[in-house]
Amino acid sequence: MFAKLCTTAANHAHHQDGPFAAERERFLVHCAQEGYADATLQGFARKLLDVAGELDASPGRTMTIEQIEVAADRWIRRKNWRTGVRRQDSARVDFINIAVRWFRFLDRLDETAGDPLPFYELHRDFILWMESERGLSRLTIHDRGGAAQLFLSWYATLNRSFAEVRLVDIDAFLAKFSKSGCSRRTVAKEAGMLRSFLRYAGSHGWCPAEIADGIKGPRIYAGEELPNGPSWEEVQRLLSNLETDTPHDIRNRAMLLLCAIYGLRSGEVIGLRLEDIDWDHDQLLVRRHKQNKVQIYPLVPLVGNAILRYLKEVRPKSSYREIFLSFTAPIKPMTRSGIYSAVKNPMLMLGIRSRKHGPHSLRHACATHLVSQGLSFKEIGDHLGHSSVESTRIYAKVNLPQLREVATLDLGGLL
Image 1 (cartoon, rainbow, N blue to C red):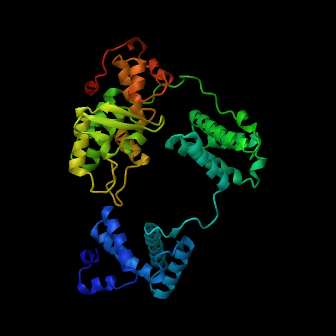
Image 2 (cartoon, one colour):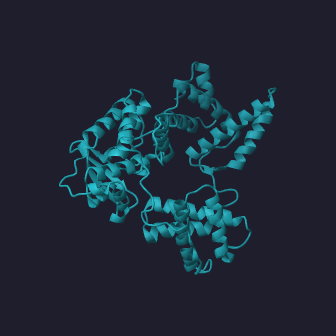
Image 3 (cartoon, rainbow, N blue to C red):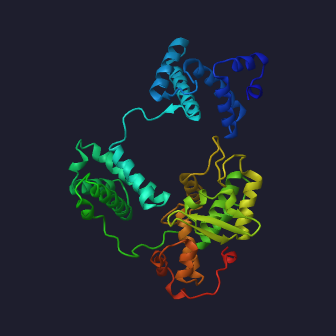
């Protein structure tokens, strides 16, 4: 890698003979695989040489963030620069950033130092219990763990032991949560997740056992909300707008087709892997994280062709097995926020009116379209991966007279 990045023999020798050359070169190879341009890698190489001169990257030696910051200050003083303060601050930040990334890559960064998260052991035990004893899905564990941590961080500001938590504290937290702009349904969901956490804590004697049963969120009436998606005509307009030759549109159109035709959730789209498409048998395998199950769909030619074009023409070279990747370095799998922007931005640009603008709105649009085509609740629920028909019943309010039984589920005719 040094030979590729260095323009002269002297420069190559300078990097090759510097401290921890093998460790620095391995990191640069890793960065190249993540899609960084050569010019960026040359900058990394120069900064790494400075870092290696200040910090010990010997095998078995770990480094904390605080030690890296001290080394950055020492390096700045030793350089004795005559530049302005802003330039020095920028160089210090660059030093710290590249050092942290390098030691993390080497698996020698000690990130446990510093103040622990509030009530860390309680939160950790709750997570382990959900994983090992309840066997809950990764998404459920993430959501409930996040809700518990949010509450624990807030409760820590009261400077009281967890044994002293009271129902009025839960009410105060939910009231603050509601005032932050969250909807009634979001607050109710938060209350339900806190109920689960405090029921666990109460059963282990960490707080009064009766608190969990007393938690009340906003009352949500069954089926009170209409679906939040755009009309099917607007979905078609959205997809047509993405029929361009730009890499982002090619990738985003493939993702949006999966949301609109199969009604996939954002996590299910970004979780798709290369081996999940059986091209020989025209099948698509989807992991339903909420139900901890796998569902197999026929691969609609429209969707298959869109994915194939993305894979052949614009997908970055990467060792990742996830299908959808970012285009900017470091190359990595798409995130929930990434796919959210891929849906929201063109919807707003086209002036598409919808109560929601993320990928879940396309899931709603898919279900509503299936209702208008006459599919039964059972067929729609199976298509969306619902575990209960009650989850599908909301769409009955869209076009009740057209709900009728049909013999087949013609995915190819959806667009």
